[in-house]
Image 1 (cartoon, rainbow, N blue to C red):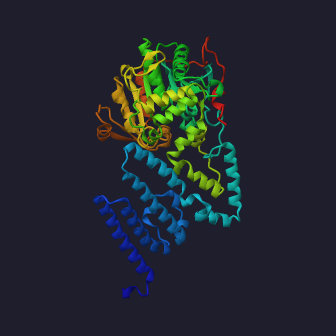
Image 2: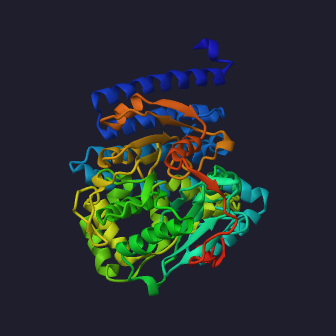
Length: 553
């Protein structure tokens, strides 16, 4: 020890390093031996006290590196705040581990885990002014101006009834997003149908109809020109139609699931066929839009209407046996309450659904905007995906109640003949058209292994592709960006694990792979028509139409 008498920092560093190494070994051994949650907590606490020496010397604690909430140097420079954040994270791990030892069912554990995580995330010291050194420092540097601006942002959001995640003044629907040229060629009380102008001299004879999720607006598929799937498909020589769902008002609160199929999906298919003068079209469905498309195709085929040549299903579930965390929020009691409240008429508020989805990733989609906005007075930057995410739509009560009971609660959609839709017993196994199935590996709303189950439900030629990233970012991945990768495997596999093990990775976007497949479904080309619509279905107004501009207040 005498060698460190005149070098105390070096001595502290050695003690800290040796102590942390010892505690790390003990922690690993405890995991192997199946230690109880309180033992893990004590070990974490000991690790923290050894790490406190590092805080005195302004060195980073290793297990804080991956936590964005405490990534700033201000959390490490001051031992008080360093102590606070380490104590919080250690106790958080202790609480969440305790759930795993509770003598309850897996479902109950999942529900407890979700509820506790909401509480733990909310109580983070980063979320409060008095315990956030970055916010306090900024308030001092700006002489309180950051706090004044934060209060202003808070009251603006309070008036909206939601947290602002993007600079909403940076975008305008129809101007710099949803700006692909086209026109509305059909409308009814539920939908508008948009036809886009061709960008090539020749186009595929069979048009492509896109069916977006009805929970948000269609322009997730037509954001800015550089990341618009609509524009990309048009550039590849396809006549593209887009279904634009109505934002439901109380006057439309009586609409049912069958109405969404009959007045929405089926009607759009018939109009697209008529305008292009073809027997069959190709169709794409995104998320719940894919479930609607599959149901509509099955019901139409039961009627002898074989008018869809191929289906593309993006992040779609046809099997709801494993729906991830969102499924934990659905049970008989909650569904019955919805059925009683709005099952015979009423509106399911889009803002409520949006908050539920955001809570699944609260540390990404809620608390960063609270901290940066209200504590630091920093308005959010412009981000088209988050602008779209905030543009939620209401749903009619009867439609929503039917969907929740027959999918998330009872998983009836995959059962042959269990559901009667538009007067037809639906059997998804009888769908005969080729299907392109895309899933995202990190999708928290549609787990990719659940999406893979569609290959076993559909008794038709299927092509399954797995993309990197999540529910939205994985889908909206334009080739020009050169980002991410995707996995392909043309061989049939009994399990998703087997499929992935035998797959190979391709760099970049999956869009070119899909277009190559789609061209096989529409091999015949014809001269592009300069005029949109036809004698029966004439243009009503320019794209994107007025339905998509109706915002939920």
